[in-house]
Amino acid sequence: MFPRLNSLKISGADALPLIEGGKGVSITTGASSGAWAATGGVGTFSGVNADEYDKEGNIIKQVYSGLTRIDRHEELVDYAIKGGIAQARVAHDMRKNAGRLHVNILWEMGAAERVLIGILEKAGELIDGVTCGAGMPYRLGDISAKFRIFYYPIISSARAFKILYKRAYIRSTEWLGGVVYEDPWLAGGHNGLSNNEDPLKPEDPLPRVLELRKEMCAVGLSEVPIIMAGGVWYLRDWIDWIDNKDIGPIAFQFGTRALLTRESPIPDKWKKKLLTLNKGDTVLHRFSPTNFWSSAVKNNFIKELMERGKRQLKASLSKEGKINVPVETGKTRKRVYYFSKEEAIKAKNWIAQGFKEVMKTPDNNALFVSAETASQIRTDQKNCMGCLSQCKFSNWADNSKHSTGKKADPRSFCIQKTLQDIVHDGNIDTELMFAGDNAWRFNKDPFYSNGFVPSVKQLVERILSGD
Image 1 (cartoon, rainbow, N blue to C red):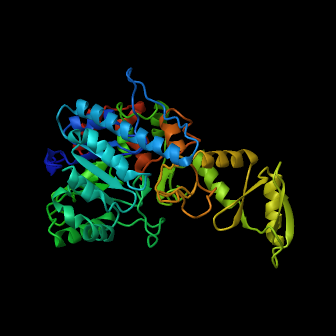
Image 2 (image 1 turned 90 degrees about the vertical axis):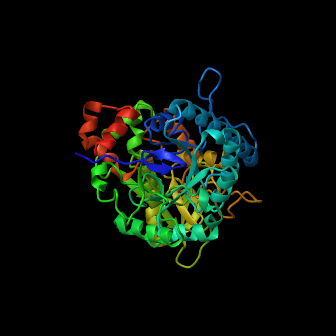
């Protein structure tokens, strides 16, 4: 029989060391996080462009009417703050004073600080902690200390924590509720793979977590919990981590597994899709406009990006040495590019297949796409609302010029658009579907036999059993 899991002091109170992983853009809501907290664990709702509701309880569709990116960005910030407040209230009502409630913030989202402060100003008394990742959230501790709320940075290495602590968190140690170690190979969504790590060679998380604990002990944080995130499914697989003196206080975060519950807001067709996945159906990729690695289901959305990226060649608008073979491109607005003799053959072949339009990349390659795809890319770039602090797809940036200073990259995509679409009943095969490496387990775990979708309470009870 699996041993009883002891509670931990989390965000100022005893709670089950089971945490619902926060997933952005309305994928973890007040309904799912409130239900999770009601079990005695830690529910986490997303503060990343969360949904707001009208008086009848219907979702208010996020429609942007601003004529400029700056105008639309201000609309987005307003939506995000109001949505975060709405989800906090739903979650707080549902948990009935049980468990803990956290808000998840993506540090690399546009105006992250403004959004977080806006949510805490109106709903801070309902929220116990702030979880934050995707970048280096140096200001997280200062903001949390101001509102007297606990904070939980998401890191993927001891080195990242050491930098954050020395530069910023040393000023607000009393509000550091825990450190989330997110496995950069196994977690869903955006991951913290560094340039020194091979995406195809996963590393054992134990030595990395022990190194993190060593760094934490060195600055007097031996009793601050570490939260293991990414790759967690059965607790029985982590039995050696529980009550391990070398690891210290440990909690476990469930992101992908928490997608499939009755309270989860994702559409039924998405839930059904999760039940059919096999090993290898998720993939680490770097198409995200954040420029981070991320893990998603390998559907037609991802496959199209993979194929699109293969159709690029060195080109010039004038003859340059061996780049001297002219090729006419474009369906309506025709333009002549010059290629080497060998690559001109590839270019003509792609054009014959219907990829007639050329879009220039930031590294001055010629990317061959269909007229339809080119039109969609240009429309999406034009409609940018600044959802990221820096976006390689549209070149928006949170700076005085509102630009990264680089060309927009047509090999990426509008992440705000696709995530809003898929969670609000869009096509699950042609939109981005984030999922962790463990997503295939839904198909093999007997708990989900015959398409069973548990309530959050049933899922937490199952997890506590070791399964």
